[in-house]
Amino acid sequence: GQNIDQPTEMTATEGAIVQINCTYQTSGFNGLFWYQQHAGEAPTFLSYNVLDGLEEKGRFSSFLSRSKGYSYLLLKELQMKDSASYLCAVLDSNYQLIWGAGTKLIIKP
Amino acid sequence: DAMVIQNPRYQVTQFGKPVTLSCSQTLNHNVMYWYQQKSSQAPKLLFHYYDKDFNNEADTPDNFQSRRPNTSFCFLDIRSPGLGDAAMYLCATSRDLESGGQPQHFGDGTRLSIL
Image (cartoon, rainbow over all chains, first blue to last red; front, side, top):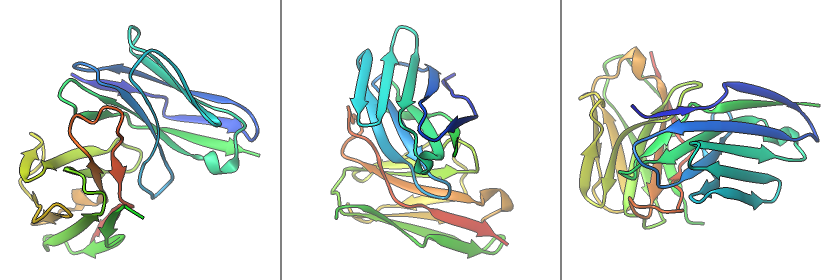
């Protein structure tokens, strides 16, 4: 079966750095997405990785290792508005998006 | 702005009473998706349209139907809602199935409650 694993919940302090990990086992791989989802709202796109390495976009960076089936999302200079769920999703060999259940990130002052 | 619009944001229906959720897009994308998402769970794909080609996920209940009368609009019909169908329903679009780096674009969702 196909599986995406992420921690259920993480807590971090405003101004700090947090890393959210994602491991996957899927039928093929055509890229990995990270989405942010605030409570009661729709997911919004954050990043896409298809090659190994780090993609940086402002305060957010995403890393991929295809050989390890592993990705992480790094959030720097945390702000209270970053409190949300972060969903990892993998595009499989059929170009179907396989979603993780998300990591709820709680930011404390 | 080009976007994906879902109506209504909140829908309340009675147990067993048919309900229709709507989605429209101005992105001119070929693919439209319907997801069901329950609290603290991953979005679950119900079906998608590539243009007019309908693709049903194997585990989508028969109670759920969809229509796409044209490129811009897609509807989700729930014929006889049960209490287990209370969820957020998300509509999304993508330019093509083989999206490469192109993300899916989501509407704001419709939260469905069943009385």
